[in-house]
Image (cartoon, rainbow, N blue to C red; front, side, top):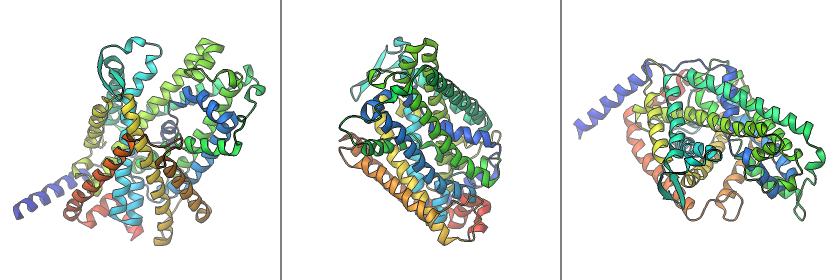
Length: 491
């Protein structure tokens, strides 16, 4: 037993020295940070689901619901901005929770974020082919297998694998290679979206947006119900805090970019929902299969193609941003000893977390083979994980305000002892409506509830395995790995 312990001790210390020998590059500029935040938030499905939203909640419920959701997401982002500016390290919530609650807090944050980000990356593997199937039905040939009554086709799946490989290579070759395309894709996404909005204001009519709410439905209930759903479309901003030490901006600017990304994405959503509602009388477009894509296609075919291209860009920016966030999550979990410290290794040439990126790629490739329907189950579990991470971040902010009042906070969130409880209430509400059967966001029985239970059990097993690594690495080494130069500011 002594020989085995000695071997593990030498192994862990060697890997730890190798992982910290090469530092990550500080190369991400403010506009690239904003693109990662906004591009990570703006996904793909809202483009073709807008008419279904109108049908369920009314145009008023959707527009005002997005407005309310943006306000709530901004409240939550204030906690991220404060802690992100005070502890500008890769790892985000993992670092925040460690500073506030110790290793177990870091473990909970790491496990929830690992689940959230990796499942989202996996989702976009089959989702990429789904967008192209509308124009190229030939992709739905050569059936491989059927999972959850949904066939998986080789050409469609191959397209998603191609984009996965592309972004893996970009991320591996250097963070700059990943962030520059992110900026240009997000710029095009927002730019084309604004073009469609202005076309809608010219060709459409405000009369088309009325009535704002459905008959025999409470306007307040429709707005609140949709706002909870809309919150799930505003979750990508937390990926920014995963890139703290790779950003080449001042701490206060870093915090500002987190809040600005939520505000920008929320405003964009609102404008696009207004544009989709005023172009045609919304009661006449409820049965359109592709939502906004079909709307603009009816007006002028090239505009419909632009709407599709916006959805495609949203898929790419989300996949790229999630690849960045997922790999940094695993990288920092390696630093913390939550996962094997080999995951904390940095490529000597490109200064990227090589083993973490390879691990994310393998998971996404394997789980992506399950197809669209199965990946939605994983995605829903990931949504619950994000809710837990949000709550943990708000609690960490409150804890550190009391525990470390001396900590420098370049971005200090205002009125947080009022806003923070409200933010927690928002997060708990989203968590509750996901777990309680019969709500619009309820998990799918029995599959997703079973997966949630398995996820909790796996987390418990990983926690037990982590404790041995924690003893070998020592608390001092873990603290230095996670906090870096901020260690002396906290203690």
